[in-house]
Amino acid sequence: MDNKKPLAILILPVLISWSVLSSAIALATAHPQAKPKSANKFKHDAQIKLIYDKAQDQTVVVLEPYPLAVDPANNFGYSELLMKAYFKYPGRTPREPETITFDFIWSGYDFRFEKRTKVTAKLDGQQVDLGEAERVAARGAPEGGEDQRLVLFVPYDLFTRIINTKSDRVELNMRGYFYFNKQTLEALRQVASRARP
Image (cartoon, rainbow, N blue to C red):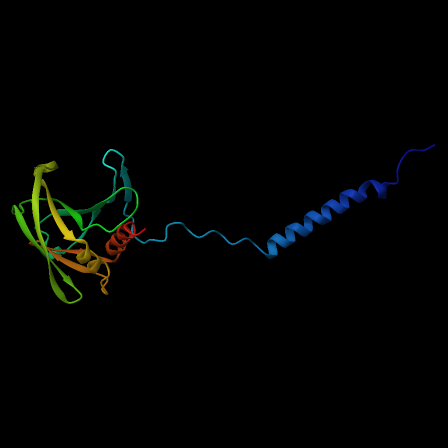
């Protein structure tokens, strides 16, 4: 007795499998999956860190040093101004602090800040007093320049007023003109968001 099966019976499962696979490919092509949106929705490239200090039982929110725009007419020669901002709250539960601290780090030549420097901001057409920045450190920089650090404590309610400005730029005056541009303000708003539960 011949045990050989007809050729049609042997290839029928293969044809069915190929048909199912072809249908799946056609369906996937007709309805492609949506690509996930980019996780980085911000235009700035600032680094923001949240650090919990177990020994002190407090959380520190830090905007790492970020370059500020400098008015070319008032930059006192070759220079760079970096801004660091931070605040802290007890424990791990976010809450708004009383003040936010700004560190302004200046690298330049032939210019030295006073021990105390008055800082003002042009905010929505009004001149606002931000207080006095204190020079707390100075050290030598490469090629004979000098790095200086100014510390400014700003009440948090005034800080929120700055970041909620209607303008795309906030002008700062510290014996020269510097700017919080659109990207800087966006970074500071992200810092402020870490104070909300």
